[in-house]
Image (cartoon, rainbow, N blue to C red; front, side, top):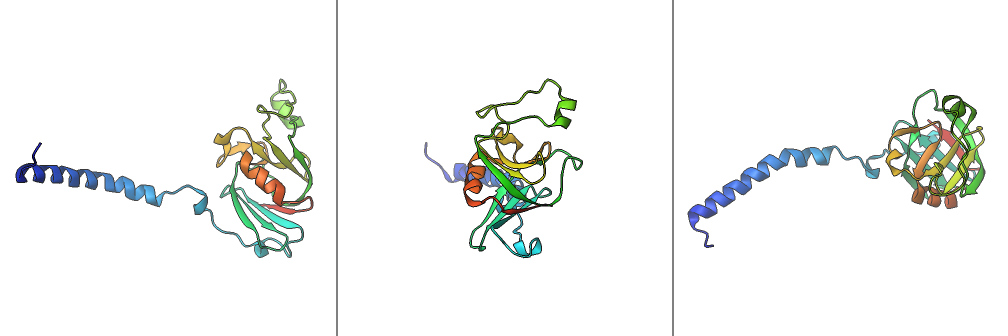
Length: 184
């Protein structure tokens, strides 16, 4: 097909109109970004007196976990799932006291009160703790992976902080037992 000046004008006019209609959507997509780069950077000195073996701040509002290694040379931010309600959210200072590859899951007493049919789940693809768990000094609280990636970025747990399995595997290697943790 040969484009004459008239056809070229109509084609370019239609293209300009389509671009104009798409522009507001493109502009709002650039403004409403929801990815890891939109997390606010934290400073460990705002939460701890020293780094010790390392430090973690789990921010339940922004749904991000911040990690610093023992000398501050490594800083990582991970997207997380957080507790469903404020009543399930324990806040304050704790530390990693135990780590487990392939954790098994056992419902807590309060979970069994609400769901008496729940049973323990061994390690594997059905396990809600994912591939790794780092247990905190608070009973029944952990930072762990999840098999259900839809939970990340949402209020979805009964108190724990959840990460993508690939991210908990990375953090598991970086954070030794004794790493201090603050939940805010």
